[in-house]
Image (cartoon, rainbow, N blue to C red; front, top):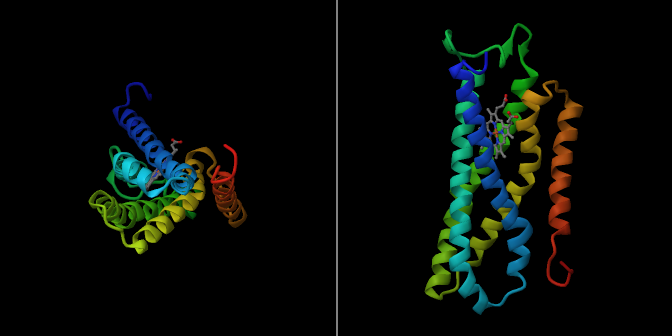
Length: 209
Ligand code: HEM
């Protein structure tokens, strides 16, 4: 029974930690893509110099640590559900593999984890290193290499687009279960279109807020 089963309680705790950290991460990702990119186009160099060294390091702190905690708790959840069974120990569980082969649930989470892991990599190894250099250039009053901004924006946009399909991959394992090519393609297409629409609709210069 869930109330007295320590393992199930730990799982709930990790699910909660995973989702709350995911909200922090993806919330900041959407802030950058839907709010900050259009906003930066409306301000001049002086305002940037005053605002960005205060604003961006704070936002990037929550962003990258949110990504790290989401990723690590996601790996714990994956192990708890698919690679460990109380009493039986570590090994592939029936949620992952049965006599009929890999389960639909496992395929969904593998899709979600693939997208989520690419996103985590982009945060820690592309966006954050580029932003660190841009912030210190702005602080020192020198021009940052324009390639850095382009690289960070491309990785950030990629993450925004991946986040739509990724979330289907997170929700479907325990709330849907079945999968076929059509379902997966519809989920990916819906996820991409939602993000495309949000980027296109974001209020920008000349468009009323
Ligand atoms: C970064 C890599 C990630 C990994 C390795 C990962 C891993 C997992 C795993 C293993 C599960 C459990 C699936 C199941 O119930 O069978 C899960 C669920 C979930 N994840 Fe992730 N995840 C990642 C990123 C994210 C992100 C960025 C979010 C954004 C909010 C997110 C939100 C969720 C949600 C909402 C659930 C479902 C919780 C539930 O319904 O019980 N995940 N994730």
